[in-house]
Amino acid sequence: MENLPDRPHPHAHLRASDIDRDQVVDVLREALMSGRLTQEEHAERLEQTLAAKTLGELEPITRDLIVPPQGAPAVPSVQSAASSSPVPIEEPADPSRSQDTMVAIFGGGERTGRWRVKRRTNAFAVFGGHDIDMTDAVFEGREVTVYAFAVFGGIDITVPDAVTVRSEGIGIFGGFGARGGSDPDPNAPTVVVRGLALFGGVGGQTSSKRHGKKRNRHHGLGH
Image (cartoon, rainbow, N blue to C red; front, top):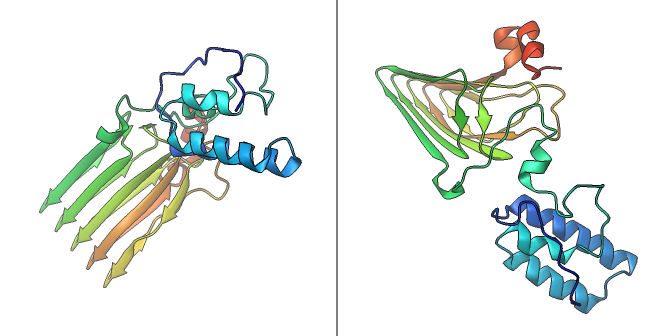
């Protein structure tokens, strides 16, 4: 690939995510199909994309292929993409440490108010329950996963209306199901709920259903 003039990237020091690499891969694919890149050039840049560890390493790969809006970086980062999200997203300094564990045995636990939703949350409820309310929370990723295990207990998850929810758990002599709003925002985070409900239940609802639509609109999270 030819050498391109250096131009500083405002977030060059940040670690690149899978979403960032996927965006670059999409640009390269379109450039190949339109004839702006040869097969050899596409293969070379694709290899560089997969090996890139920071946004600064990704930016030069597509610098001569796309024209960003004035004042915007050539490669959209997680932070810049999140700026238009109705739900606050703040990438952690060390994504590998973005994990939380909640345990309730013959008791209860809760997360409410202003708190940080880690990329992975492990919630265990045995003869007990958890209340996980993300209405006013800050998300540490574009996609976060809740591993919910309820045995003779229950786990209740509340998400902002704009958030997309994927329920991938199993219910055995119990119920497992979490739902988001009917019109999620594509810029908002995705909450993936996985796990098991055994003689118990894992369920979810939107903030507007739990707190009322008036309160949700006040926080800018509802539709």
